[in-house]
Length: 299
Image 1 (tube, rainbow, N blue to C red):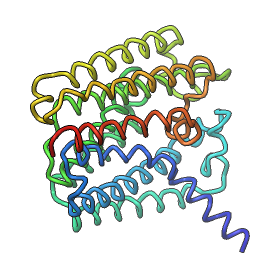
Image 2 (image 1 turned 120 degrees about the horizontal axis):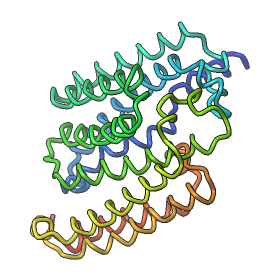
Image 3 (image 1 turned 90 degrees about the vertical axis):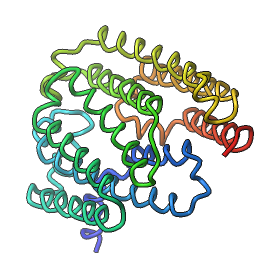
Image 4 (image 1 turned 45 degrees about the vertical axis):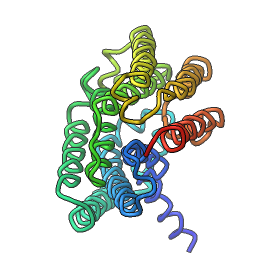
């Protein structure tokens, strides 16, 4: 019985459920599209989240299968189920395929064709990333950022909500910043960089640090410009959205502290789960957005 529970636990870890926090981006269009009180939109958003989570877990299992050898050289990733030998290659292949099929079937029957198309684009991007693109510096972080944009587009498609250019831009920039922070964590590990990730040979700390600073600056300026732009003020019926930029600045500064001082930016999802400061910042931003859009502004 104990052995069975451990085996099930290994498959749960292979699916990386903590990473499903990223799929929360599918709900962003619902918030900014004034659909929080629309039950049908919330149901569609939930199924979009489930479908994307299953697809993402399928990708994680596939990645672990391909990266098992390099993961064994990593001080943390060596404990992953495939790299450690807890799950064999055949088991990982079947698990990945089952998750993929369930995700596609749910999308086909419970959502719409546009969502399914975006989900397939996400899967294709990750297949290309896993097999080739992650070896290319800069291209690898762009792929990660694009994956987040696809999550937002999928949420909009599932609920029939138009996605603004601002929302796409801000999502891409934030994900790019987090991707550079993740690369920084890989670089500070005292191991052979290319053994962990092929693209790391074309990165160094100075370049990644400058890239993070540049991206963070653009994020803050772009967000403030978004919050005070005439079209956004007209759409939401309030000019008070700029107040939420305070939380954005605090969040960026805290992540810099985590990356440069604490040196623990390897997994954004784990950082969010463990860091109370970031949790408060995100909840503060969300509360501010809800008050500004749904109370101060007009729905």
